[in-house]
Image (cartoon, rainbow, N blue to C red; front, side, top):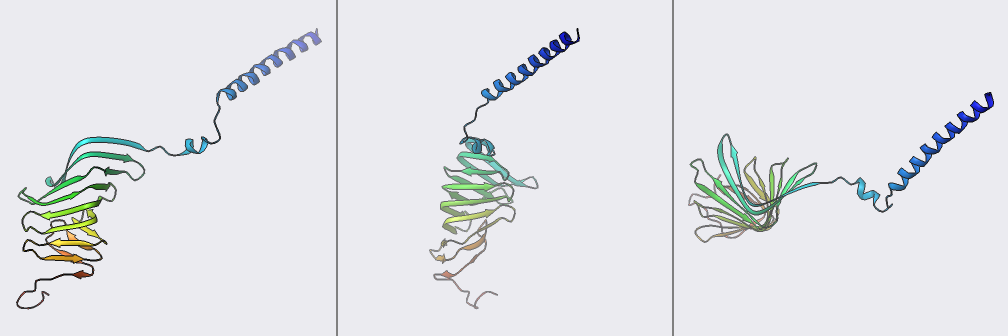
Length: 198
């Protein structure tokens, strides 16, 4: 009797063991990866959002300071999110009376959300609507928090009176072009009758 029970228990154990091994083999056979695909499976996926006909407002203390428009936008939801404007962008800066004070255009823009800075390139033009001063350059950074424009590229300021100033190694300027500081300047400069300003 003992030997029959032992044999039956052994058979039952063997059947269960066989089922577990067979199930495991089936699962392994169903999960097949090409070794070349494994690195791409480990890569972090970046979320992407797109939009057309973009109109965005920037305000400080419930006052509108700027309005950005662009025909197309791509937003990347990465560790450091950013927004690209690959088909141009236009920005109107407003003064306290809600009049457009300055206009800015570029064929490409990239907004870094955490830094609150915008990189502009390709035919960058900034024009003060009141004074008529116009800045032209190939690349420019716009710091939204500091309301500052800067670069280290060849830049030109065209004054309303026809005077042209050349900043050979870049400049730093207020976003409304009310002041600017050049790096390695050339060109005619107007000097007050009482001498250089202090």
